[in-house]
Image (cartoon, rainbow, N blue to C red; front, side, top):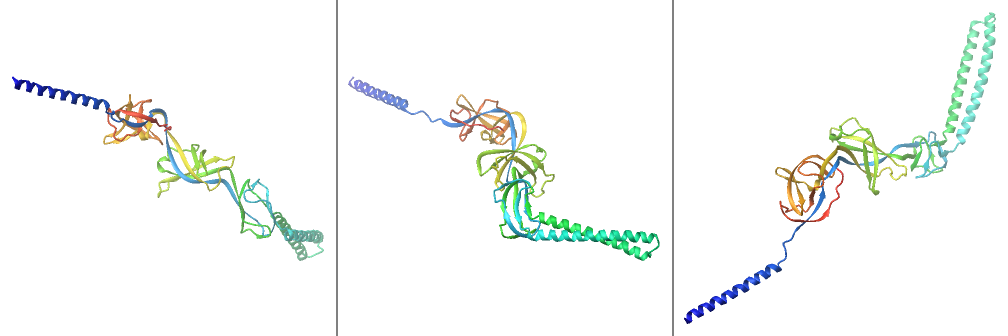
Length: 368
């Protein structure tokens, strides 16, 4: 009987220990922190036009420019402009000393007058000889000599007139005039120096309208037409985009680079763009006017194509999608998701179907 009492006591003690351990386990479980939730960034699936852009780097060039040289040689008497000066067509740029050219005009004028006098005398002599020849008073030889003298005097007078005209033109060319309106970008001469037709004196550029020439890939040749828009960014003016128009498409493809050249013209009324600036050009082709599109960063390439992670009630759904046109920042989605759906763009590593996630940010999706 005594043994039965001892056995019952042992069972009671173990039972109490078991209850204590159970309570401690429940307490530990109640104090444990919940498992961590993956944080993701998402974007909304949109509908609209999708664009494909071709990008290249070129340089800003003037729409037109002139390298100006004096047409006559001489010493520079004065210069009316400097680098950076705006000029109008027909404006005086510099004056070459006129002393020698003025004397040359005076000399040519005197020779012309003398030749005219000789011509008038030869004309009178010929008329008199002609009358005498008709009356048989002089020989045929004298008549022909008079006629020859008249022709020679006429030719000398014509020659003197041409020489006088050339001398006057040279005097006029002592004024170096701008042939275009624009800005003086280079000045290579100074007052008192000798100049001439072989020396460039000024470079003037028209900058109220500028252009950029860039190369595009062969695949764009069929899609790009004159009148298409081009967008230009320059390093010197950050955060500003200039819109231009394609004004020329070169007709051939370079067989080495498989590219073709285009010219984009831009209005530049405020003269912000200057020749030589580095230009980053984007030529946009509208591939489709209205389509469903998702950000490129949301698509994951698998063994059997593309899929996205769609977020529904903070849980992941792995959706297989078929893609179409690839735009600049987005890709056309043919099926699988719809406008308004939320897809993961950042934090895709380790995601699985049905996993719970926490959305921490939403990407702003660009068009196409």
